[in-house]
Length: 275
Image (cartoon, rainbow, N blue to C red; front, side, top):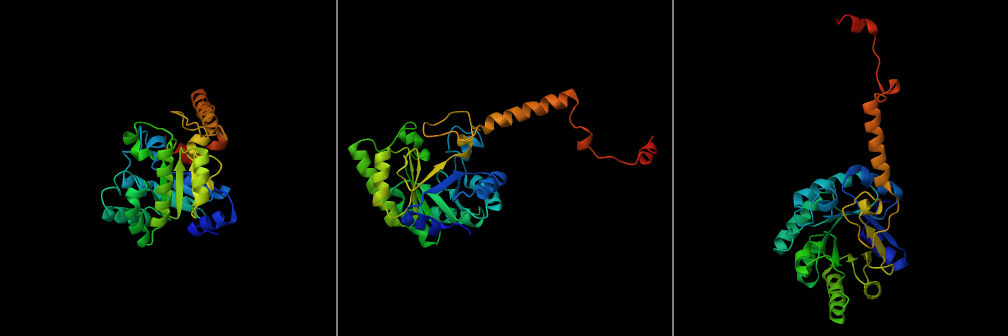
């Protein structure tokens, strides 16, 4: 059965852990879907791992629509959440609703995700009023990387921890169906999880969250520019792929590929008439 925001709510109620991964294309989404993942995030992290940008700031709504639609064609059973990219919702409530609508209509999203706490609660309310489910995102919010001055753990001081808890409660009150917590100390993430009625999805926030998410290219060893502390390698697909590429190069140069079994024959009498 198709997994929905109701699936996520019930999992929280039942104490069942939720699983999410990113995906940006049809083939990867199909594999994750067949494996039984609960949710796929079409993350603006595609700016880093797919488009080669240094951060997520340059990602556009059109980028998210393009990749979201590809993922939606590949994943039929999982909940598909699409990131709202930088400046697609910050400027006004109107922009937020229009762009969220585009991600649903054109990008195949079942829900959208946006970063921020109390400052984006009006946007969360308006988007949910338009019948579009919203996942919030607190802690390290990559679109605010320039304001943060780097990729830093959030909520470590008493004041910062209190603010993070208050903002988590605020986004829940605004109508968010779930909350991503990124780079938050594990005890604080567990406390926030216990206080919220909506599920929390952690990334670098410890095992006390209701679920976990990773960038698939990180956990499969396919992205080598950097590796965050919170990433565990579940398979070295990057190594396998690189070896496959090298073997292909070697066989083509040696003339052993394509072999006879990889080619198509024809009637020699037809060929003789061409000379």
